[in-house]
Amino acid sequence: MNKTQLVNLIAEKNGLSKRAAEQIVDAVFDEIVNTLTEGNEVKLTGFGTFSVRNRAERKGVNPKDGSTIIIPAGKTLLFKPSKLLKDKINN
Image 1 (tube, helix red, strand yellow):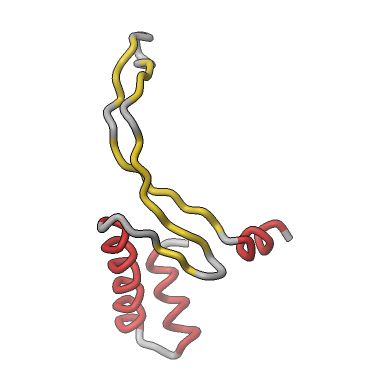
Image 2 (image 1 turned 180 degrees about the vertical axis):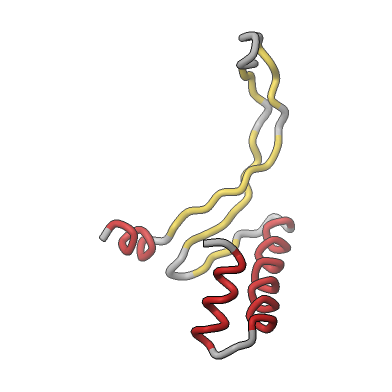
């Protein structure tokens, strides 16, 4: 499912215009991004938790020539699904 499909589905299920549904979806995504960029977690009960983790600098291998390279430190996004979501997917 892509964003357009999500907007269409929300609009249809809730009797909203596509424009209103798109504004809601955009607002939700914007708030999730803003919260994560501030270094905070986003916990959505029944869905999961988004968080940002710092990754340390590490050694890697250049796949072209096999030489050792240094991969710089950075941040990565983590998502941990809730037990409810895991159970729904596995049934």
